[in-house]
Length: 407
Image 1 (spheres, helix red, strand yellow):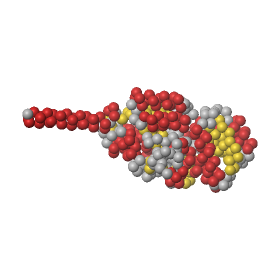
Image 2 (tube, helix red, strand yellow; image 1 turned 180 degrees about the horizontal axis):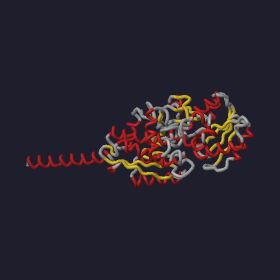
Image 3 (cartoon, rainbow, N blue to C red; image 1 turned 30 degrees about the vertical axis):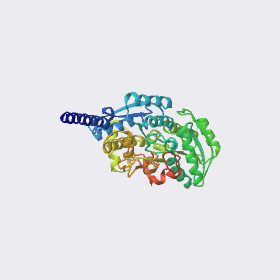
Image 4 (cartoon, rainbow, N blue to C red; image 1 turned 60 degrees about the horizontal axis):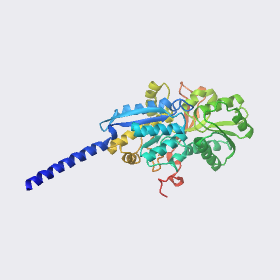
């Protein structure tokens, strides 16, 4: 009887151990693959600064990482959210539920990002936003699984607003994209313009992807403001600046200030039109040897230099994969814990840090567009005027309304 008991006990122990090993193996990489979704504007007003280039950057990061993590393959899929929150939410739900996507990045357009980030929080899936800007993403809308990686309306408004006001641009009129991003950018910039001694004298709002800015520019012109702040981005910023030139704005003393500008915007406008413009960026391809090395490889594939959204997507993906490797699993709680404990140092950021609210804090740069005579090549467009440490550029946790921040 004793021997039977012993054999039975050993058999049960062996089965338990085998079962434990199976469970353990299953938990290392869910579904046997790490799947990353790039959800962004692939065809609309923001597609040049993000779009296919963002997916190219993510695919580069996966290839550079080695194509596998913890012995399992890494896959990248992409989709166009068309700048519509309902389409973004539906695609993210399909990816999470059916495609078993582990992390979504890109997310250009604040409305789309807010919808996807909420869904990710509900489903315990990671979102690493590199394109949307509203500070709401790291305030009330923040989740334990969301990261805001590249820039936000607080940093953009603070750095640019301070520089312009201190340079003599005291009175402002805003032309604003009429959705969460533009409204947040106008409000944050107004706060800093006022703080540094200027004032906002008015604003007008336009629909996303506006072709005709004439009525908005006339209102800005008639306001008499020294500064016309463009609280929009991409194609909207380009159209507004081109049409302002046709109206003769600038020749009469008023100055346009783009509050969210990308290298691709300046390339489209040309240096003759854009020269002297100052704006804030989270990255510039020609900053140092490391940024130039990445940009050269990116250009070979995409035939354009990387924007801060695209470079940020590479960095976010690479550090996400490093966190999986360090955690020994793709479990989102374990991965987020690693991400928030890591020092993020690469060509994109130096000693970056993901805070408890999901804000990735890193240096920001005040940029100035070069004169045509200063440019030495097709993409030699900008110069860095000032480097602003992340702790100075981004909203301090003491001002946060994130439910993740303990007061």
